[in-house]
Image (cartoon, rainbow, N blue to C red; front, side):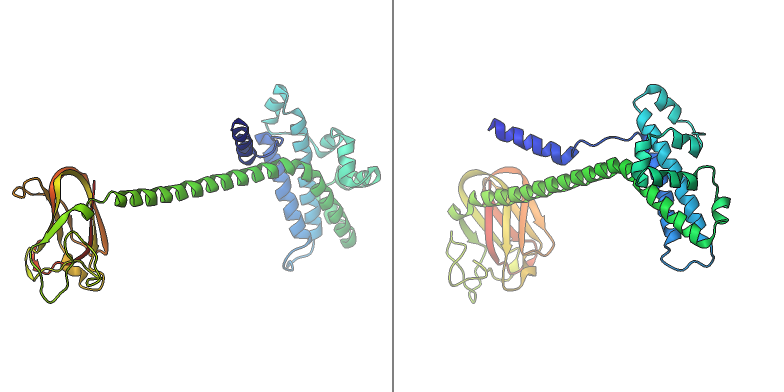
Length: 334
């Protein structure tokens, strides 16, 4: 049993927290986000979904990718210094480093990996460092397009390792949401099952089968069951029917004083359900003094009336006007 519990705990931890993922500082996450936005805009300028109204989009894409590379290199420096209290303090302020300074301060292996080799890294360096948007705009159209493609691809590969932790944390968050949703579904299912079980248990405690009943009258042209029965072949839709009279009623005798906390009433099944309104439930220990415990004024097929537990022997159901009264079933629950 202990091993099963430990296995369950491990499963919960894995699904709640996800795998161990590196944590970026808030500052580093902000810088990575800036790099991603800038390079995404560069890609849209380079490959627009709709034709642009003016020329020069490739030069704009170059400058946007240059900006993306700047933010990515700054994020790399932030990630390397985040463990240092001094570095964390300095990175919270606006950074004045130039692209050239950031490039020279970045591990060459990282730059070469993103560029695709030392020679390609040198080519990207020539494209970027000490250049401005004006320099890109002065390039020929074919050279602009080629430079934009190189810089956009380089920026994307430079950003990718920085974006992995954020994506991993996003996936961990999705797993947490799924786990919470699964837990809620399980809890709801248990709640519905518990309510169904309770309702079934309550009905198993019904005192009506052992209680005798007497209606205030009997309508001769309609069938009726014999007390204490509440179902019989002759009457499939109701078990008694009174004449049309003032305050028609049915009284149940429990034969001893018992606890009563709920009455469940099934209305006539085939028609005329409105005749059972307003339906009043009363209790008594002497058949002289009656206490009203529930009243139903709205239409119903089945009505469960719950009330504070009463000590009673007799239970009366009546309609507080002139009409017929006929019901399909009455259950008396302790």
